[in-house]
Length: 221
Image 1 (cartoon, rainbow, N blue to C red):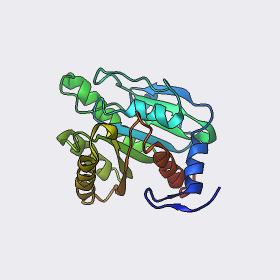
Image 2 (cartoon, rainbow, N blue to C red):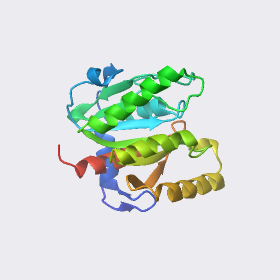
Image 3 (cartoon, helix red, strand yellow):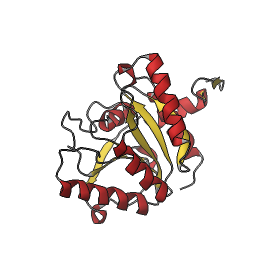
Image 4 (cartoon, rainbow, N blue to C red):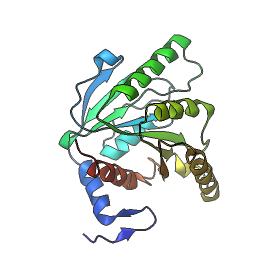
């Protein structure tokens, strides 16, 4: 395959192919952890997905892996209450984090989710990056600031992924993208680029795979 550069996305054809191969093959549920003590043993690089409740984390994981129901999706906000671990080939692990910002959840439950997320982010040596999902229709909300602050304090690398981009027009998407870039430009732990996706149309999925492949190629485990 040609190594010509994909100028729009910034990924070479080789990186696109590496990302495709990385997510091809068998993917399986590893475990669900509701506390620091129940986290599975670290086995390889972990890519975690964070975001407000119902932003589309489970749908994105299914799209990345080409599975219809690897991660359970729900229209009920706050359903994912644990860290859910999925394993692929070559030791790669994907982590579906509990959604945050669900106002109707009990305060005790929100506090438990928050502790779990904070403990995981501060103590997981194999965590390569957190992708923070933001609904393209709404942009950053106050609830996002808390997790971004936590990621910054923990010195965890993260990148913004816009979801549901098929549900906004091109002009609005461009405006939202520029606003997000300006906002994260002030945060040291934030990766400067962002990736726009739609699990409905498949837009941006190969770019996200390529981004993960590039990231892991630059790290040693």
